[in-house]
Length: 214
Picture 1 (tube, rainbow, N blue to C red):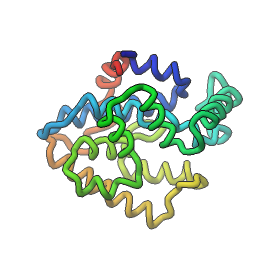
Picture 2: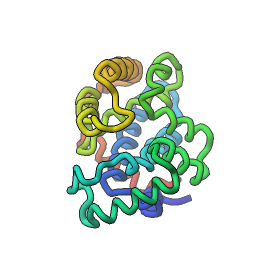
Picture 3: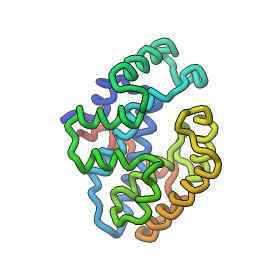
């Protein structure tokens, strides 16, 4: 087993992308600990820590040069090119391929696969809270920290408006409708509210995750 920080280093994951995945896992940990239904907490956390491993593929590095420091845009462009050469142009596919390389269980692979907008409608009607949590928490974290579902949606719309898989407004509204329903389902089984999850509340979980092994 390796610490998650070692895995990020091995795969040359950008610091801001590593922190995003850590924050998503931190939100998941807070929810798991507050739930009154049983979930596979360890599998949920592993999925969240690894769900965006291939995301550099879709980054327009020149648009946010501050994210590229201190190594610089040229360095990360080289990393991006290597990812595309190895995994192709689909960032979600790349993340799933990395999950296979790491020898993750089928259940964790399936959880990573559900962290995708295309399956939100299906997850709403399923009873699997592991999937609900994974689908939900990624939409609570922007590059800058923990936000609401709506804030995340507006930020993502702006960042990926030219992306091949970008939503049109009708699809974005439909996706948010499903996410809000998932949010309602999750928090009907907790004593906390969505707004209780923020940058400060996940700090203790981020500290624990530094030593989390996969």
